Image (cartoon, rainbow, N blue to C red):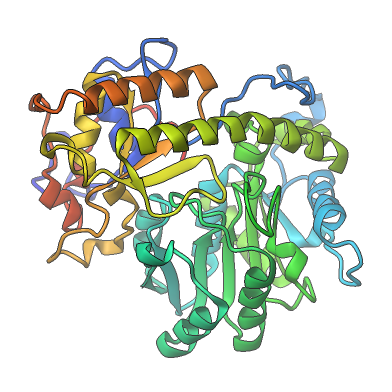
Length: 453
């Protein structure tokens, strides 16, 4: 890409994640997050207001003068203890090995936690799955100590991946670590129960670190993991088993704006990721870490989970029924998360790819996310072929029920009018082929309003 006249030569073009690109395009079409005319079905965060049966929402934070200082890089001790005790209460009952404060590092949001982990990795092969969370792409490119190795998930198999398959990948590709979101963004696939135990056992026996992004772990709808799950339940020794767990207040407590997250794992690894934080981000917000203490009791966590599970399950059922009616084909219904990931290939030609569908939906003031953005491609090394997810779209039931219903109504109206073609965008538009073949034009993404994952 030609260098911008306003960017000094010393700086490289830095791409935005796919979701941020989507929001930039929506902003050019007049999107206003406060406007009821828009339905943001691309939303990567849950609705944040009070829900029936849920605990009171925290809408005010008092700041102690002592908390005006920097927080420790690994987080305030009290919050580290609270996170450890929460996992012990929810997932480690009956286990002799228990988490302690030393097993926890606090970070300023999910991306900060992931960045710390990536910065602490050595010269290994790191396996990652396709599709997966869009932000992994640049994360896996910017740190050059390790080599990222893609592992394909098969839509025909519902994106399932057994412990036996994981063992084969670890041994065959010489993997030192594997990164995965579980529940998976965007597919909603969940590895839980005996399958998750098999993953953890494989990691322990083959000495391969599992780095598990569990930010949707309380949004589990079906199967052994419902209603909430964690690999913490499968670990034998918290200081020896090579398993890192990342979570935070963003999704499971519905406080995305607080930017409080944590890394849970063996003490030696926590020391390393905390050291990485000392030069990467300097630590999180001390006042908000203090305020987070009130949220993390097991009782309050269960109450919060039960309340949003009732509301979000209703939205999930609505979205599944309406997408089927519209003609979107899901490879697998979401077992977890608040997303549906489906193919629009069977729709009329003007809207039969993820990018065309996205642009047409913007005209109806509905935001979606084209599936190609989840075909994680660090370094744009896969440049000669189309994405497997060129016809896929991610739909979010994170917004309120009325916004979800309004958005689905407009999408159905759009599909029922197949003769119209989306008007060309007035801005530079990455072609479907260009976006699929490595997304090399991502670095030209325009101004945007971030919305989360």
